[in-house]
Length: 282
Length: 292
Image: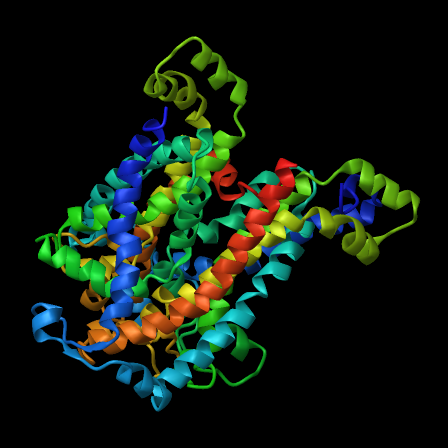
């Protein structure tokens, strides 16, 4: 193990280390802690300039309930869910198939198609912006959740295919050979042999795509406007102009907007990190 | 057998072609027009050849954006050593270390919009915590996002926060897989500290470093959300980058110049293409090596 395990060092080093970690963590999360502290203060503290002293009253419930009941925030959150969940399902479904095709079969153009998916996944969004917006407008899908979902599915298929293909390549190929010898149809091999083995990959991709799509901002402002279809990342700017300079409410609002992906991460941590670090170890 | 792969590929390839591959080609085409985005390009657009690209050469805002992209690219790479440093710091097995690792990592799952807001409040001249700390130590408060010479660095620092977390998790995973025998062998050769890190550990972390490079470079060139949220390109356009300037030219109140915007996007695309081709080349090499 590197560096040397702390248990093998002197007692003094161990104590220093143990007390250094929480300090480092507080420093690391300082900007976020500041926001959390703002979100429980009353407005009066800001007008009187009491930003960091003891709050004159404890307004956690008032502030957060105003986010939920006095603004469009719940609608934006719902939109985010209705955009994110179908995208996750769509992108995972498509990439199970593309990953299977590229991982299992040998045919001309296999590598080329694979490289196309990877390359496409890295391009700047702006090179797609004008044509995709045009396409969405002419399909009558501008400012709809469906318009965003379709684009997200298509774009995420690039990353998901990379992920799925590499995962399938690592599966024991003998299993598929055996099924073929038995005369099992190709789609049955996909459905009954490979798909059950892909469960961990599907779980990892689902949580990753969930956070990616939930956090998207660029496409939200390019393809939608207003509370009808906009997800919470775009809605938060409208929220902030509704409560301009009311830092206690703006803070509470952005914490609410951040909760779903954070909760997803903490609940599905193992899958999330497995997905994110795929390829980081040979 | 021969049609099966085609059928499995069809839906994915079709979606990807319609929304990614074809739009790239279309953007190149649109960049040769002067078009406000209304009506059909073939009817309303005026063909101008390379004039949009000529205009870029004399556009001060384009030059500023390009320079800011360079700053992003160079400074964003600091996330890699910083991530490695934190990973080394946390690579222990003391009680509760797993929770610490998660808490160090979780800024990465916040959206860039939230990170942007959190940091713009952190930087506030009056209400911000940063200036509260600075003035506690007796210095003058600074208005980072209001100062054209500092604003870009302020945004990059905010961007480094989640990016460092990402690099950290890559390295933590990599460190977990470091071969203990090699480390012990290194210790027997009396390799310690820096020498051990450089000659024994880092070579084994190569795959993690490669991914960290890829995601950091792509992330740097994709920066948009935080600029939009924190400064909206200001003050005086000093924090624009190509991705943001393109959006301004094509879709904001500054005008609907789809052709000019597309020309900017093409330049950004070509810059990224250099890196993308390098990444692909490395991946193909690795794949060939692992097959033999």
